[in-house]
Length: 148
Image (cartoon, rainbow, N blue to C red):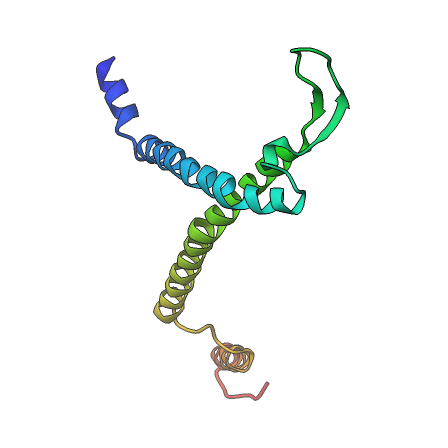
């Protein structure tokens, strides 16, 4: 029972996944700081708002202590910006380099395989070989030399 659990925990993909989760959590803090500290104030400045989270349309003013009902599209815009930042960093920092390395390794392996294998015979070589085989067969059957 414990042997199977140990094998499961020590598998490479489980450890890789755990590392990815930890790195992703740390990266989320950086992206949140970028969005709330830099991008939100710039966009809020464009809409003349205190912060992007407060940008929206008031649907109904509530009297008294109850909060107004607001369609807060600024929050959605902030989340979209955050998502695009994360996607861009993941693509440019992880996906592109990995794809490049795979492509280089594949072409290198393909070149090694091509250099190890002899080149296939050309059509002219195959036809000459067939001609020679037919000549030999004709000579061995008739005992004399005849052109084909």
